[in-house]
Length: 617
Image (tube, one colour):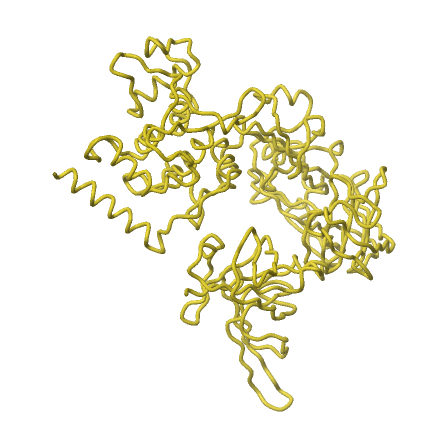
């Protein structure tokens, strides 16, 4: 009787928790999201050809292997020391996982002493194993198996995406994928997300933080130099170089490599920075950051720290090439043979700057800040007469930086719907596109320009490679992606006659900013706005246009059969009691809110929804 009461109370408390808005279960994941998560953790893996075979049914041996791999340290299991069951000899591929699964209390054999590793596993048994991982045992359930287990399985939302419905319905690999993915965000018996036990965390919406998870499960880095392939523990089936699909043969010397064996994936990063060493912080004896070309980079490896220290081979003033990892930190240091080559971009500042002289003092030199097509800013010492707004090429030769202004090179035409050409000129596979305005810029993927007509002064510069493809493209104020977007919460006017003053209060990314006194009256009213320049010191501000009472669908805002594409960095705010609170798409997209989308300009002109305001119904 007591067990039945405990089970009922447990189910009731779970139902209540799931009903509370602050603890609402996150929306289900797509198949791609779920697959990336479970493969990154090594819970599932493909066959010898990398195929996941998601439609195939799962055997007991396969499922217990997945379950053990879903435990801390579960990827370190080898062959069993002895045969755990007559039908699972030591030589069986899953013997170690079967032995570990039994030892952990996740699974057991049959009364006749066998395990039956090839038998298809049903929903009830799979759900019970998942609940065991969460800390639930037989003592937590009453009545005949599997009534209580399946009730808790549904209450914890472990069923999202799982097609198997009946207790004995065989699970497919797709079912297993979703079951283990759901397990990651489910609370354990102690109330903590299961993912925490694996050293990872959920995002603000309660979903698996896929970026943090995949990043945390990467191995590396390794620099692609002589013999680099022998340092990889596998031959990857998938190669991604700077965010684009590539091949092993596409890896070049001095690329920085990371990998995940379970995902069968190798990532390569090509970012480099070349120039004289201008500063080492906090000291040359134990540097944690280095400044090259006016930009400070954190040092991420002990070998790079050694090379840049007073024990290494490089000193202040030496021209070096920093090899940068996926987070932009220094992985290794090389000489002129690994030069980052030339940078093409827009001069956004020309001023005198102070540099350390390596002897405890400093000197002043004329410096140019270049916003390059890779989206980064670089500072160069130069006597060149280039001016702000000029398009220039910066190159390092014999340890010296030379800047050369590039003549106007405009182009007009329409970008194809596939985003792969401008007019009759195709885009190169690794094209770099910069859209800038003033001192701000944004790096674009070609697909961002799909369908847009570029005319007049929109194209400031382009260059062609040896195949006649556009490989560099500099645009001026085409998309608006370089600006910040937020909400103006208050604007007041004071003074009289010729002395008018204005004050502004506004939110950007949830942070509050204010301009207490200004003589500028920007064309804005309370509500979502576009902010030009720095958030704390805007150069300009303008109101956005609303589309009210719509719905979110497929990454777009839909109203009256009209679709408004969302910015990749759309800001979501909930409006409650006259105040704005930073929220997320995941929280507001499942109903219960009246949504207003605010966009900067029509889609045909490159506009996007920049801010969404949600009000509870």
